[in-house]
Amino acid sequence: MNLNELDMEMLERYIDHDLSDDEKSSLEQRIATEPNLHQELNRLQFTRDAIQNFGLRKKVESIHDEMMREMKDASGKTIQINITRRISWYRIAASILLLAGLFGLYKYLTPSPDKLFKDIDTPFTIGVTRGSNDTEALVQSYRQKDYSTVLQIFSTILKPQARDIFFAAQSHYANKNFNQAITLFKQVIELQKQHHQLDVIEDAEYFIAMSYIQLNQLGQARPFLEKIHTDPNHRYHDKVSSLTLLRLKLAH
Amino acid sequence: MKVIRKYSDSELIDAINSPGEMENAIKYIYREHYQLLKVYVLEHQGSDEDAQDIFQEVIMCFVDMVQGNKFRGESSIKTLLYSLNRNIWTNHFRKKTRSSYRDTVFEAAQENITEDVTHAISKSEAQKEIWSTVGKLGEACKTILLAFYYENLSMKEILTKLPYENEQVVRNKKSKCLRQLQELFKNNPLIQPF
Image 1: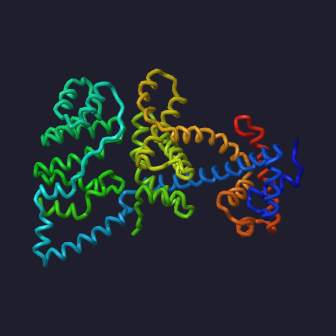
Image 2 (image 1 turned 90 degrees about the horizontal axis):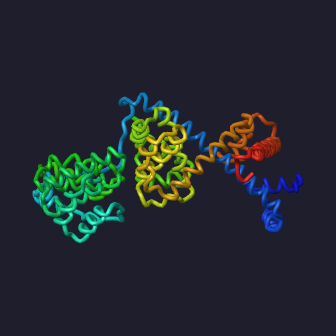
Image 3 (image 1 turned 180 degrees about the horizontal axis):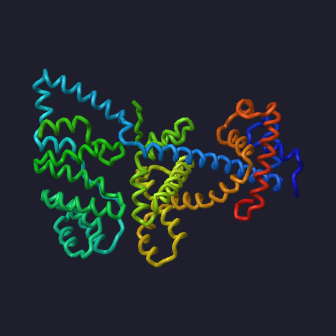
Protein backbone atom coordinates (compact mmCIF):
# COMPACT_ATOMS: atom_id res chain seq x y z
CA MET A 1 0.00 0.00 0.00
CA ASN A 2 1.36 3.42 -0.95
CA LEU A 3 1.87 5.96 1.79
CA ASN A 4 0.16 9.31 1.70
CA GLU A 5 2.07 12.54 1.19
CA LEU A 6 1.93 13.48 4.86
CA ASP A 7 3.48 10.18 5.97
CA MET A 8 6.23 10.53 3.37
CA GLU A 9 6.98 14.01 4.62
CA MET A 10 7.04 12.84 8.24
CA LEU A 11 9.46 10.03 7.42
CA GLU A 12 11.76 12.40 5.57
CA ARG A 13 11.75 14.81 8.49
CA TYR A 14 12.41 11.83 10.77
CA ILE A 15 15.62 10.84 8.99
CA ASP A 16 16.60 14.52 8.83
CA HIS A 17 16.17 14.82 12.64
CA ASP A 18 13.64 17.55 12.03
CA LEU A 19 10.72 16.31 14.17
CA SER A 20 9.73 17.52 17.60
CA ASP A 21 10.02 14.98 20.43
CA ASP A 22 6.26 14.38 20.40
CA GLU A 23 6.12 13.94 16.63
CA LYS A 24 9.11 11.62 16.75
CA SER A 25 7.65 9.47 19.51
CA SER A 26 4.28 9.22 17.80
CA LEU A 27 5.85 8.29 14.46
CA GLU A 28 8.11 5.67 16.07
CA GLN A 29 5.04 4.00 17.60
CA ARG A 30 3.41 3.82 14.19
CA ILE A 31 6.59 2.54 12.54
CA ALA A 32 6.66 -0.30 15.09
CA THR A 33 3.16 -1.43 14.12
CA GLU A 34 2.81 -0.48 10.45
CA PRO A 35 5.06 -2.59 8.18
CA ASN A 36 4.63 -0.40 5.09
CA LEU A 37 5.75 2.63 7.09
CA HIS A 38 8.73 0.66 8.40
CA GLN A 39 9.64 -0.51 4.91
CA GLU A 40 9.50 3.02 3.53
CA LEU A 41 11.70 4.25 6.36
CA ASN A 42 14.29 1.58 5.49
CA ARG A 43 14.24 2.73 1.88
CA LEU A 44 14.67 6.35 2.85
CA GLN A 45 17.58 5.55 5.17
CA PHE A 46 19.16 3.44 2.44
CA THR A 47 18.82 6.35 0.01
CA ARG A 48 20.36 8.79 2.50
CA ASP A 49 23.27 6.39 3.19
CA ALA A 50 23.78 5.99 -0.57
CA ILE A 51 24.08 9.77 -0.97
CA GLN A 52 26.60 9.93 1.88
CA ASN A 53 28.64 7.12 0.36
CA PHE A 54 28.48 8.77 -3.05
CA GLY A 55 29.75 11.97 -1.41
CA LEU A 56 32.66 10.10 0.12
CA ARG A 57 33.44 8.55 -3.24
CA LYS A 58 33.51 11.98 -4.89
CA LYS A 59 35.75 13.25 -2.09
CA VAL A 60 38.19 10.35 -2.55
CA GLU A 61 38.22 10.95 -6.31
CA SER A 62 39.06 14.59 -5.81
CA ILE A 63 41.82 13.79 -3.29
CA HIS A 64 43.10 11.14 -5.69
CA ASP A 65 43.41 13.62 -8.55
CA GLU A 66 45.18 16.09 -6.30
CA MET A 67 47.60 13.46 -5.00
CA MET A 68 48.38 12.15 -8.47
CA ARG A 69 49.30 15.70 -9.50
CA GLU A 70 51.40 16.14 -6.36
CA MET A 71 53.23 12.87 -6.90
CA LYS A 72 53.82 13.64 -10.57
CA ASP A 73 55.77 16.79 -9.85
CA ALA A 74 57.00 15.81 -6.42
CA SER A 75 60.67 16.01 -7.32
CA GLY A 76 61.77 17.61 -4.13
CA LYS A 77 59.20 20.39 -4.10
CA THR A 78 57.56 19.12 -0.96
CA ILE A 79 59.73 18.61 2.04
CA GLN A 80 58.16 16.31 4.51
CA ILE A 81 58.95 17.08 8.06
CA ASN A 82 58.33 14.45 10.57
CA ILE A 83 57.18 16.55 13.50
CA THR A 84 57.96 13.78 15.91
CA ARG A 85 61.45 13.50 14.56
CA ARG A 86 61.92 17.27 14.71
CA ILE A 87 61.02 17.25 18.37
CA SER A 88 63.42 14.36 18.83
CA TRP A 89 66.21 16.36 17.20
CA TYR A 90 65.66 19.07 19.79
CA ARG A 91 66.18 16.40 22.41
CA ILE A 92 69.38 15.34 20.75
CA ALA A 93 70.59 18.93 20.63
CA ALA A 94 69.91 19.24 24.33
CA SER A 95 71.78 16.01 24.98
CA ILE A 96 74.79 17.30 23.02
CA LEU A 97 74.91 20.47 25.14
CA LEU A 98 74.88 18.46 28.30
CA LEU A 99 77.54 16.17 26.91
CA ALA A 100 79.95 19.07 26.68
CA GLY A 101 79.83 19.63 30.44
CA LEU A 102 79.23 16.23 31.89
CA PHE A 103 81.80 13.50 31.56
CA GLY A 104 79.47 11.02 33.21
CA LEU A 105 76.90 11.64 30.56
CA TYR A 106 79.60 11.19 27.95
CA LYS A 107 80.28 7.75 29.37
CA TYR A 108 76.59 7.05 29.20
CA LEU A 109 76.41 8.18 25.64
CA THR A 110 79.33 5.99 24.55
CA PRO A 111 78.19 2.58 25.65
CA SER A 112 79.80 -0.70 24.85
CA PRO A 113 77.92 -2.78 22.27
CA ASP A 114 76.88 -5.04 25.17
CA LYS A 115 75.29 -2.15 27.05
CA LEU A 116 73.59 -0.87 23.92
CA PHE A 117 72.29 -4.35 23.21
CA LYS A 118 70.85 -4.70 26.71
CA ASP A 119 69.16 -1.30 26.49
CA ILE A 120 67.17 -2.12 23.37
CA ASP A 121 66.87 -5.88 23.70
CA THR A 122 63.40 -7.37 23.68
CA PRO A 123 62.45 -11.02 23.21
CA PHE A 124 60.65 -12.24 20.12
CA THR A 125 57.09 -13.34 20.92
CA ILE A 126 55.64 -16.01 18.72
CA GLY A 127 52.02 -15.74 17.60
CA VAL A 128 49.61 -18.29 16.16
CA THR A 129 51.02 -20.02 13.09
CA ARG A 130 49.69 -22.47 10.59
CA GLY A 131 51.52 -24.60 8.11
CA SER A 132 52.69 -28.01 7.02
CA ASN A 133 53.62 -30.79 9.46
CA ASP A 134 57.29 -29.91 9.11
CA THR A 135 56.60 -26.25 9.84
CA GLU A 136 54.49 -27.10 12.85
CA ALA A 137 57.15 -29.43 14.24
CA LEU A 138 59.70 -26.69 13.66
CA VAL A 139 57.58 -24.09 15.45
CA GLN A 140 56.84 -26.52 18.26
CA SER A 141 60.56 -27.14 18.78
CA TYR A 142 61.18 -23.41 18.72
CA ARG A 143 58.55 -22.88 21.40
CA GLN A 144 60.36 -25.50 23.51
CA LYS A 145 63.65 -23.65 22.88
CA ASP A 146 65.02 -26.80 21.28
CA TYR A 147 67.03 -24.83 18.74
CA SER A 148 69.17 -27.70 17.48
CA THR A 149 66.00 -29.63 16.54
CA VAL A 150 64.63 -26.51 14.81
CA LEU A 151 67.78 -26.33 12.70
CA GLN A 152 67.72 -30.06 12.05
CA ILE A 153 64.10 -29.93 10.80
CA PHE A 154 64.90 -26.81 8.80
CA SER A 155 67.73 -28.59 6.99
CA THR A 156 65.26 -31.26 5.79
CA ILE A 157 62.67 -28.85 4.33
CA LEU A 158 63.15 -28.78 0.57
CA LYS A 159 61.35 -25.51 -0.14
CA PRO A 160 61.36 -23.55 3.11
CA GLN A 161 58.88 -20.70 3.44
CA ALA A 162 59.74 -17.33 4.94
CA ARG A 163 58.45 -18.40 8.36
CA ASP A 164 60.59 -21.59 8.37
CA ILE A 165 63.67 -19.54 7.54
CA PHE A 166 62.69 -17.00 10.17
CA PHE A 167 62.56 -19.60 12.95
CA ALA A 168 65.86 -21.10 11.81
CA ALA A 169 67.34 -17.58 11.93
CA GLN A 170 65.91 -17.07 15.41
CA SER A 171 67.47 -20.36 16.49
CA HIS A 172 70.89 -19.30 15.20
CA TYR A 173 70.37 -16.01 17.00
CA ALA A 174 69.51 -17.82 20.25
CA ASN A 175 72.62 -19.98 19.81
CA LYS A 176 74.65 -16.77 19.30
CA ASN A 177 75.55 -17.74 15.73
CA PHE A 178 74.91 -14.19 14.62
CA ASN A 179 76.45 -14.36 11.15
CA GLN A 180 74.24 -17.29 10.17
CA ALA A 181 71.25 -15.54 11.76
CA ILE A 182 71.86 -12.38 9.72
CA THR A 183 72.14 -14.35 6.47
CA LEU A 184 68.83 -16.09 7.09
CA PHE A 185 67.01 -12.97 8.34
CA LYS A 186 68.03 -11.22 5.12
CA GLN A 187 66.64 -14.14 3.12
CA VAL A 188 63.38 -13.76 5.03
CA ILE A 189 63.13 -10.09 4.07
CA GLU A 190 63.86 -10.81 0.42
CA LEU A 191 61.36 -13.65 0.30
CA GLN A 192 58.61 -11.68 2.00
CA LYS A 193 59.15 -8.73 -0.33
CA GLN A 194 58.95 -11.05 -3.33
CA HIS A 195 55.64 -12.46 -2.11
CA HIS A 196 54.35 -9.12 -0.86
CA GLN A 197 54.00 -10.35 2.68
CA LEU A 198 54.80 -8.23 5.66
CA ASP A 199 54.25 -10.39 8.70
CA VAL A 200 57.84 -11.02 9.89
CA ILE A 201 59.81 -8.42 7.92
CA GLU A 202 59.86 -6.02 10.86
CA ASP A 203 60.98 -8.75 13.26
CA ALA A 204 63.75 -9.73 10.83
CA GLU A 205 64.94 -6.10 10.54
CA TYR A 206 65.12 -5.71 14.29
CA PHE A 207 67.01 -8.97 14.86
CA ILE A 208 69.47 -8.20 12.07
CA ALA A 209 70.29 -4.94 13.87
CA MET A 210 70.63 -6.77 17.19
CA SER A 211 72.88 -9.41 15.61
CA TYR A 212 75.18 -6.74 14.17
CA ILE A 213 75.38 -5.07 17.58
CA GLN A 214 76.38 -8.41 19.10
CA LEU A 215 79.07 -8.74 16.44
CA ASN A 216 80.24 -5.20 17.28
CA GLN A 217 79.46 -4.11 13.73
CA LEU A 218 77.56 -1.00 14.77
CA GLY A 219 77.80 0.69 11.38
CA GLN A 220 75.95 -2.26 9.84
CA ALA A 221 73.27 -2.13 12.55
CA ARG A 222 72.63 1.57 12.05
CA PRO A 223 70.51 1.61 8.85
CA PHE A 224 68.17 -0.99 10.30
CA LEU A 225 67.78 0.91 13.58
CA GLU A 226 67.25 4.18 11.70
CA LYS A 227 64.49 2.57 9.65
CA ILE A 228 62.79 1.28 12.80
CA HIS A 229 63.08 4.70 14.44
CA THR A 230 61.71 6.56 11.41
CA ASP A 231 58.61 4.39 11.03
CA PRO A 232 56.20 5.18 13.89
CA ASN A 233 54.21 2.05 13.06
CA HIS A 234 57.19 -0.31 13.10
CA ARG A 235 56.67 -3.13 15.58
CA TYR A 236 59.94 -2.24 17.38
CA HIS A 237 59.65 1.53 17.03
CA ASP A 238 59.39 2.03 20.80
CA LYS A 239 62.72 0.27 21.36
CA VAL A 240 64.74 2.67 19.20
CA SER A 241 64.73 6.29 20.30
CA SER A 242 66.75 9.21 18.93
CA LEU A 243 69.01 8.76 21.92
CA THR A 244 69.63 5.14 20.94
CA LEU A 245 70.77 6.31 17.51
CA LEU A 246 72.99 8.99 19.01
CA ARG A 247 74.60 6.50 21.35
CA LEU A 248 75.11 4.10 18.49
CA LYS A 249 76.77 6.85 16.48
CA LEU A 250 79.08 7.83 19.32
CA ALA A 251 79.95 4.25 20.14
CA HIS A 252 80.78 3.50 16.49
CA MET B 1 57.82 25.42 3.49
CA LYS B 2 54.95 22.96 3.39
CA VAL B 3 54.71 20.99 6.61
CA ILE B 4 52.97 17.65 6.34
CA ARG B 5 52.23 15.89 9.57
CA LYS B 6 52.72 12.20 10.15
CA TYR B 7 50.21 9.99 11.89
CA SER B 8 50.58 6.96 14.09
CA ASP B 9 47.99 4.24 13.48
CA SER B 10 45.73 5.40 16.33
CA GLU B 11 46.00 9.05 15.25
CA LEU B 12 45.07 8.04 11.72
CA ILE B 13 41.95 6.21 12.92
CA ASP B 14 40.89 9.25 14.97
CA ALA B 15 41.45 11.49 11.96
CA ILE B 16 39.37 9.27 9.64
CA ASN B 17 36.54 9.52 12.14
CA SER B 18 36.82 13.30 12.31
CA PRO B 19 35.19 15.12 9.34
CA GLY B 20 37.62 18.04 9.53
CA GLU B 21 40.70 15.81 9.53
CA MET B 22 39.69 13.04 7.16
CA GLU B 23 41.03 14.67 4.00
CA ASN B 24 44.51 15.16 5.45
CA ALA B 25 44.47 11.59 6.78
CA ILE B 26 43.64 10.19 3.32
CA LYS B 27 46.37 12.31 1.74
CA TYR B 28 48.81 10.91 4.29
CA ILE B 29 47.79 7.36 3.31
CA TYR B 30 48.47 8.24 -0.33
CA ARG B 31 51.92 9.61 0.47
CA GLU B 32 52.85 6.68 2.69
CA HIS B 33 51.37 3.69 0.91
CA TYR B 34 50.35 4.41 -2.68
CA GLN B 35 53.69 3.62 -4.30
CA LEU B 36 54.11 0.27 -2.54
CA LEU B 37 50.55 -0.85 -3.27
CA LYS B 38 50.87 0.29 -6.87
CA VAL B 39 53.93 -1.96 -7.32
CA TYR B 40 51.84 -4.96 -6.28
CA VAL B 41 49.24 -4.30 -9.00
CA LEU B 42 51.90 -3.60 -11.62
CA GLU B 43 53.73 -6.83 -10.75
CA HIS B 44 50.47 -8.77 -11.10
CA GLN B 45 49.64 -7.79 -14.66
CA GLY B 46 47.85 -4.55 -13.81
CA SER B 47 48.37 -1.17 -15.43
CA ASP B 48 49.05 2.17 -13.80
CA GLU B 49 45.38 3.02 -14.29
CA ASP B 50 44.35 -0.25 -12.60
CA ALA B 51 46.60 0.60 -9.64
CA GLN B 52 44.94 4.00 -9.29
CA ASP B 53 41.41 2.54 -9.44
CA ILE B 54 42.25 -0.20 -6.96
CA PHE B 55 43.84 2.26 -4.53
CA GLN B 56 40.69 4.38 -4.52
CA GLU B 57 38.67 1.28 -3.68
CA VAL B 58 41.17 0.43 -0.95
CA ILE B 59 40.65 3.88 0.56
CA MET B 60 36.85 3.55 0.38
CA CYS B 61 36.94 0.13 2.07
CA PHE B 62 39.40 1.34 4.70
CA VAL B 63 37.32 4.42 5.57
CA ASP B 64 34.19 2.27 5.67
CA MET B 65 35.85 -0.24 8.02
CA VAL B 66 37.20 2.46 10.32
CA GLN B 67 33.96 4.45 10.46
CA GLY B 68 31.96 1.26 10.99
CA ASN B 69 34.32 0.20 13.83
CA LYS B 70 35.24 -2.88 11.81
CA PHE B 71 38.97 -2.24 12.18
CA ARG B 72 40.01 -3.00 15.71
CA GLY B 73 43.76 -2.75 15.30
CA GLU B 74 44.56 -6.48 15.28
CA SER B 75 47.02 -5.72 12.51
CA SER B 76 48.80 -2.52 11.53
CA ILE B 77 47.09 -0.18 9.07
CA LYS B 78 49.90 -0.91 6.63
CA THR B 79 49.08 -4.63 6.73
CA LEU B 80 45.34 -3.99 6.39
CA LEU B 81 45.81 -1.71 3.37
CA TYR B 82 48.08 -4.27 1.79
CA SER B 83 45.54 -7.03 2.34
CA LEU B 84 42.71 -4.91 0.90
CA ASN B 85 44.82 -3.98 -2.12
CA ARG B 86 45.81 -7.58 -2.79
CA ASN B 87 42.29 -8.95 -2.46
CA ILE B 88 40.52 -6.18 -4.37
CA TRP B 89 43.00 -6.55 -7.23
CA THR B 90 42.54 -10.34 -7.15
CA ASN B 91 38.76 -9.97 -7.47
CA HIS B 92 39.16 -7.39 -10.19
CA PHE B 93 41.62 -9.53 -12.12
CA ARG B 94 39.41 -12.61 -11.83
CA LYS B 95 36.60 -10.72 -13.47
CA LYS B 96 38.86 -9.56 -16.27
CA THR B 97 40.40 -12.91 -17.09
CA ARG B 98 39.44 -16.53 -17.02
CA SER B 99 42.52 -18.73 -17.04
CA SER B 100 43.85 -21.44 -14.79
CA TYR B 101 47.09 -19.50 -14.60
CA ARG B 102 45.17 -16.78 -12.83
CA ASP B 103 44.08 -19.20 -10.10
CA THR B 104 47.64 -20.34 -9.54
CA VAL B 105 48.97 -16.83 -9.34
CA PHE B 106 46.35 -15.62 -6.92
CA GLU B 107 45.85 -18.69 -4.80
CA ALA B 108 48.17 -17.35 -2.15
CA ALA B 109 46.61 -13.90 -2.25
CA GLN B 110 43.33 -15.20 -0.85
CA GLU B 111 44.93 -16.63 2.25
CA ASN B 112 44.46 -15.01 5.63
CA ILE B 113 41.61 -12.76 4.47
CA THR B 114 39.52 -11.77 7.45
CA GLU B 115 35.74 -11.72 7.55
CA ASP B 116 35.75 -7.94 7.95
CA VAL B 117 37.94 -7.49 4.89
CA THR B 118 35.70 -9.83 2.88
CA HIS B 119 32.62 -7.92 3.97
CA ALA B 120 34.20 -4.55 3.16
CA ILE B 121 35.18 -5.75 -0.33
CA SER B 122 31.77 -7.25 -1.17
CA LYS B 123 30.07 -4.10 0.11
CA SER B 124 32.36 -2.07 -2.11
CA GLU B 125 31.25 -4.14 -5.13
CA ALA B 126 27.57 -3.42 -4.36
CA GLN B 127 28.32 0.26 -3.89
CA LYS B 128 29.40 0.60 -7.52
CA GLU B 129 25.84 -0.03 -8.75
CA ILE B 130 24.57 2.48 -6.20
CA TRP B 131 27.10 5.14 -7.26
CA SER B 132 26.17 4.61 -10.86
CA THR B 133 22.49 5.13 -10.03
CA VAL B 134 23.13 8.27 -7.96
CA GLY B 135 25.21 9.51 -10.88
CA LYS B 136 22.09 9.42 -13.06
CA LEU B 137 20.49 12.24 -11.04
CA GLY B 138 20.63 15.72 -12.52
CA GLU B 139 23.50 17.97 -11.38
CA ALA B 140 21.20 20.27 -9.38
CA CYS B 141 19.77 17.33 -7.45
CA LYS B 142 23.20 15.80 -6.76
CA THR B 143 24.49 19.14 -5.52
CA ILE B 144 21.62 19.78 -3.15
CA LEU B 145 21.50 16.22 -1.78
CA LEU B 146 25.27 16.10 -1.25
CA ALA B 147 25.22 19.51 0.42
CA PHE B 148 22.53 18.39 2.86
CA TYR B 149 23.37 14.74 3.52
CA TYR B 150 27.15 14.59 2.95
CA GLU B 151 28.40 18.06 3.85
CA ASN B 152 25.72 18.40 6.56
CA LEU B 153 24.92 21.98 5.53
CA SER B 154 21.74 23.57 6.85
CA MET B 155 19.05 24.86 4.48
CA LYS B 156 20.23 28.37 5.28
CA GLU B 157 23.84 27.53 4.34
CA ILE B 158 22.72 25.81 1.14
CA LEU B 159 20.74 28.91 0.23
CA THR B 160 23.95 30.96 0.26
CA LYS B 161 25.58 28.56 -2.20
CA LEU B 162 22.75 27.83 -4.61
CA PRO B 163 20.47 30.17 -6.58
CA TYR B 164 17.17 29.47 -4.83
CA GLU B 165 14.67 32.07 -3.59
CA ASN B 166 14.28 30.96 0.00
CA GLU B 167 14.79 28.07 2.39
CA GLN B 168 11.38 26.57 1.65
CA VAL B 169 12.22 26.32 -2.04
CA VAL B 170 15.49 24.56 -1.14
CA ARG B 171 13.61 22.22 1.18
CA ASN B 172 11.04 21.36 -1.50
CA LYS B 173 13.75 20.80 -4.08
CA LYS B 174 15.65 18.52 -1.71
CA SER B 175 12.52 16.41 -1.06
CA LYS B 176 11.80 16.15 -4.74
CA CYS B 177 15.36 15.05 -5.49
CA LEU B 178 15.35 12.52 -2.66
CA ARG B 179 12.18 10.90 -4.01
CA GLN B 180 13.55 10.96 -7.52
CA LEU B 181 16.56 9.01 -6.32
CA GLN B 182 14.32 6.57 -4.49
CA GLU B 183 12.45 5.97 -7.73
CA LEU B 184 15.73 5.31 -9.57
CA PHE B 185 16.65 2.76 -6.89
CA LYS B 186 13.21 1.15 -7.06
CA ASN B 187 13.59 0.71 -10.81
CA ASN B 188 16.98 -0.96 -10.48
CA PRO B 189 16.56 -4.67 -9.65
CA LEU B 190 20.26 -4.95 -8.74
CA ILE B 191 19.88 -2.64 -5.78
CA GLN B 192 18.76 -3.93 -2.40
CA PRO B 193 16.56 -3.43 -0.40
CA PHE B 194 14.42 -1.88 -3.13
